[in-house]
Amino acid sequence: MKTRDRLRIAVQKSGRLADASQQLLAQCGFRFRQSRDKLFCFGETHAVDLLLVRDDDIPGLIAEGTCDLGFVGRNVLAEQRLAQVAEAGSSALCEVRALGFGGCRLAIAVPQEEPWVGPEQLQGRKIATSYPALLANYLRENRVQADIVVLSGSVEIAPKLGKAEVICDLVSSGATLAANQLKETAVILKSEAVLAAADLDFVDERAPVLDLLLRRLDGVMAVRE
Ligand code: PRP
Ligand code: ZN
Ligand code: MG
Image (cartoon, rainbow, N blue to C red; front, side, top):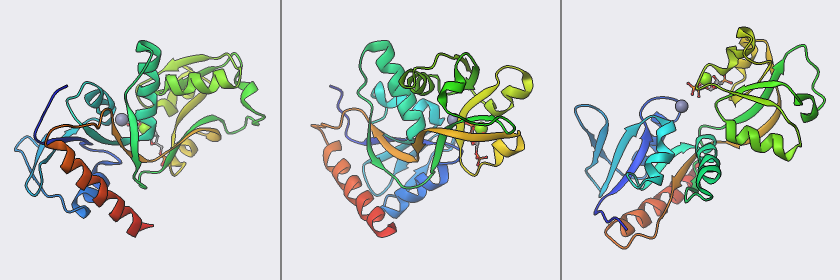
């Protein structure tokens, strides 16, 4: 097992969870000095450093041991966990805490004029998504066979482009679906920002820092409720 004397946390560089993640760490009393290239933040108050990365890279960085923890959407964590299980038979990735911000849901959306009767109407359809593993799981559970079209972004325009008739994407305010004449139907996963990890049985200097971080996080979240 690798050893390290400082805890390393992966945080989204920019996007929905970026600011709130760093604010939460600040509320926990952790202060950082950002490197010139803005990709690394050195912990000045505690032995904790941040790596600022794309959210989709966070589960992989944790799984390979480059980072010990990550602030990431449950949607991204669950998708990559399922993909690892499919590929390797298991995954060490796990959700350590739900963080109470960045709430959204992964949902099926159909054209506004199409009535929704249930998952059976997805049979034989083309569904565009960036979450193929979570979608495949939902389809399997509902005994539906459909054609999954994987897109890394801009999923909501797939119907207009004729790439798919239905989509499975994140919905927060619903504005993106409305702007594309789509409506939310079945919710596949309720998501929010979570603290993700793989192995937390540290035998080095990371153990006491992790304990402190978790205690402070729990304290901050208890006050927020
Ligand atoms: C998600 C999703 C939609 C949008 C929905 O994208 O893919 O595009 O948010 O939000 P709304 O319901 O409030 O309109 P996100 O901004 O997370 O980024 P990405 O698609 O670039 O990953
Ligand atoms: Zn992303
Ligand atoms: Mg989007």
